[in-house]
Amino acid sequence: MNIGRTFVNGVFIILFCSMTFGCATLNSRQKSELEQYKAQDGVYVEEKSPGTATALGILPGGGSFYTRQWGLGVVDLLLWPFSILWDPIAGYEGALVINHDETVLRAKQKMKKELEVVEEKLDKKEISEEEYRRERHKIEQKYSVD
Image (tube, rainbow, N blue to C red; front, side, top):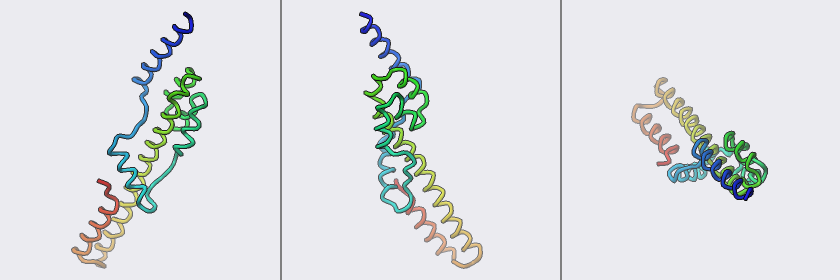
């Protein structure tokens, strides 16, 4: 009877914490975007390894802590060993979210730098307005993943 009550309390805590702290996941558009960035040379950023995050999910809160999901990590720590059922997945998904966000940031920074170079050439009259528009369009297409 005591084990059953503990299990029910654990399930309640999991549901409450999931609604409160959430789990970081990518939507289908973001997953597609990340795959497209991976195909581009020098744009993709892997700040957190999904494999490492998954493996650390076996430890109490390891996957969540590794991927900066502090609230979920505390819950996982408290509910270990039950958290082994979901923390490897939460760690994996969290790593993907971090990598997506960092990749998008890097792509924006690289595009901005490349556009600044072209704008500088235009300002110095090294290229025509038409060449500027073509170059700008090429740069925007290069970093577009829509």
